[in-house]
Image 1 (spheres, rainbow, N blue to C red):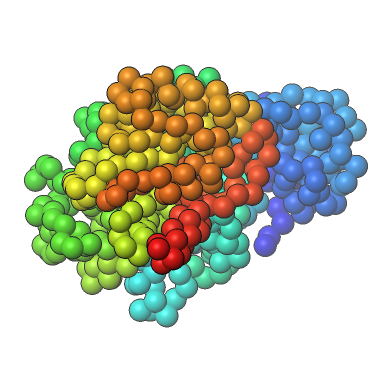
Image 2 (cartoon, rainbow, N blue to C red):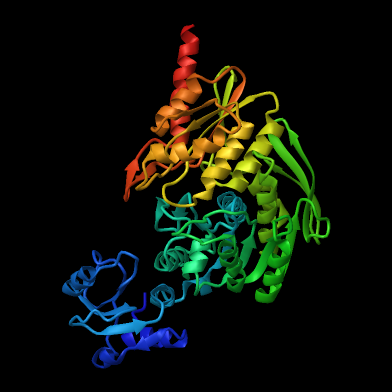
Length: 507
């Protein structure tokens, strides 16, 4: 990879109107930068160090200098013995500098970004499955993905911490994908990523707006719904082509912004026949979901073998993206037929089919509403139990919304841990329970998540379905500032269903 000199990094900041002062750098402008980094533990000789983060301390900069940093980017001058490059916004600076450092990788790969309150991961994986089928037919590499589930870029394959990582990591993954001869990358784009400028310097070939509902409202996320919504609308300023769900709330504002900011707009809907991509005749046949899609070029039936009638909306978003990318319809059909999203609508059942368990990442008001609506349609004769929690110190309105929806619609509710962070699990569960018990007293607080799942399985009434939501296939819980290893919800279900089956055999 090409090494750029310091003056080229400074010029990028100047072009983006983000530079305040670089006068102390005159003696080293021609110096080649071997590494751009914001991690003081990963410094080499001739590093340009970025002082980023709410918890940043001067000692991290001093550590970086001792290890080889020759200059630093910051919103303040720390008066140390290497030059400071002063900027207006450190997050915006990291994005533009990272794009340069990794040599503008998005120029050499097709990119798709998806935002929305619910459905981002599933839609991203639907698109990946379709593109993978097409690439396979051409004997080309799979599609890269950056999601809240995992990251795959041809070099790295790992479980994710964030829905959308820092800008430096985004451009690193893009560079890895390009160098691995991947031709497509699909990514989830969170409201925080858009608000904080993590995708400032990324232009998407296709940007998708799925839906909007009140979420992520807290002192450390978004002040109110308007801030959340306007942050999500920023995706269009990063998108050549916009795909918009006409069934979303506040659709008029979404369309207005898409038309203003994107060169081309494609609409999709399960309700509005005027949409460019329209789904109708949606039906459940045994375990499959079938639906007919009308596009400007064809009308065809497609199939999902993954549960959840609401997933037709996600599939329609994927079809719209692939229509924009000129993917032949047979690969769209084949991809959707086998598509899965780890930890999303994963259905398991005991040998006697007495108890079903549905593991899903549903964790906000809109996803809970869609989940219960779909389960009531698809499993009409079963009692619904649910195991869930809420994260600590953020998205505080979820406690009211999820508690209310679960209380209204469940036979029994189990409240448990879900990334409590610095907040006691019991406090979170008690907060949720005040809304649950407005509708039912049949609830229980079990702080240990695995134990809660176990109790739900072994105490479930006959002919029931247990919804286990919020964590999916994640193998870590956040306690304090640490990520503590744990069994995923999927592994817990498999473990205790196996125990249930053995007990039944003995009887």
